[in-house]
Length: 338
Image (cartoon, rainbow, N blue to C red; front, side, top):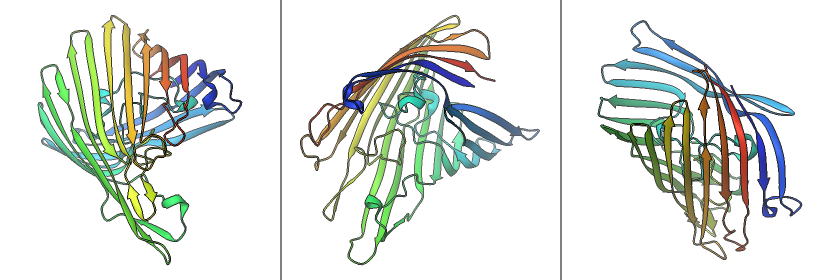
């Protein structure tokens, strides 16, 4: 159970009034959860169900995070259900926690860190102590049509697919991978058939030496909007230019360091994104970045606090050239984890 309290400030470019606006917030972010796990006696068959709990008044919601089962035989595992996987693995996540309900800020998702979300899937994993491989067939997330057209059907010749490798050596670990999904459209009379792809390649690195941990993730791809969450649906999707589809290229990276001193953790990180499309009027690219510093303290095994400051620079509008503003948050997350 997680609760955020703090202050959010947005520059005039992001507000309705055109003035800088700041406001207090107290809420339960959506990555609060209720979890249950199940195992056979030999633990070769098991499952997990996890519900997300969010409260942002005047509403409160419950969502499905995980619901899957698996069967393990030797070094192989077959899993089916809703989950994430090795691609964009959260084993490399940075500890930016405050602001999910305020403006979708969590783990610098979309600000240097790529994560493809939890979706229904069937996955096969072969895993040893030092290396492994995982292949997954997944449900696509982006099923929309061009500009909401009603005479167009969205079709998928194949499910979304991801292939990820794992390598460990001493203090070093990496999970390089690739994700691909092809979106096809069958058009009615007076329209043309079109298709476009979402492609993502990711390279994460984690290195631990004593109390110090370094985390990095770099990614490159195209057409992330909706298919990859936390990315702008305005600026990271493909653009239909006449009868041609123009891909939007997405690349970015995140780097963070952590240093443990007893129950206190010192951590800071920064992320960078660059999105480009030749059809944009003024500039053919957007550059944005975010950074954070946090000093979590773990009082007991099940309770800790997470003070954090974060800053986000949204870059320039590529159609008009105008500044899209900046934002900062200062807050504390109370974390009860059982």
